[in-house]
Length: 274
Ligand SMILES: NC(=O)c1ccc[n+]([C@@H]2O[C@H](COP(=O)([O-])OP(=O)(O)OC[C@H]3O[C@@H](n4cnc5c(N)ncnc54)[C@H](OP(=O)(O)O)[C@@H]3O)[C@@H](O)[C@H]2O)c1
Image (tube, rainbow, N blue to C red):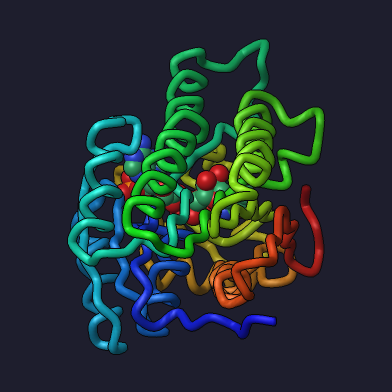
């Protein structure tokens, strides 16, 4: 029986590492000694995370591109493998939703973008990672960040993208039975991230008010300052989970022996809004 594996020294690619769940995963694995490649579109935030990783003893490299740009995504994954001689982990996390919008009134351009980012980029990323893991002879893990929307039938176009993520994940698990590559879909409930920038602002403001936060200082992209996000997160902890728990869960999956596949995990805070 093989032993648990270490994070230290692994080459780890994380998309959507500039915010929320992806940022928590990247920083956590970096602090465990991983060589983390962080991708997102917000340079400053990625640089801050990279600095924290280096300070904690890991290695970090930053790239900014849109994951819907398939050649950019493929090049980034391939070069991470080529430059380090291995590719141990891809976390397909970049994504967004229009939770709360209806099919009757939703915007088809937003749906197209959601499909490109949440589904197509995830599949392209998986393919590029498999090629790099095979080329470098690495034992690999692919972590796909899905959603509890994938286990509800009435979850709109966003939910449809996450049903597709689970479908891709399960198909890959079967395809890769002959390879030392494991595939896991993680389905978070509601976690305190900047995902809420895609929700109706009035809803967020009324939630904040209900826990005594009178004013929220959204920036132009709808992000909250880190201090306010932390305050909001602390006040809403029973219903808004801390993304750190998802990072801990990813670490657990990555340290299991390669011959075991955790195919799907649902992770929720204490009280469930969805
Ligand atoms: N938070 C929740 O309650 C929750 C629940 C279930 C599932 N999820 C899933 O968790 C994942 C992460 O979401 P989050 O909650 O952490 O949200 P978030 O704080 O808004 O972070 C989203 C990340 O994805 C990146 N991203 C989005 N579109 C991109 C694109 N086209 N190209 C490159 N990067 C892109 C963002 O980069 P920039 O900011 O640099 O643009 C950011 O780093 C998503 O797949 C989401 O569906 C979240």
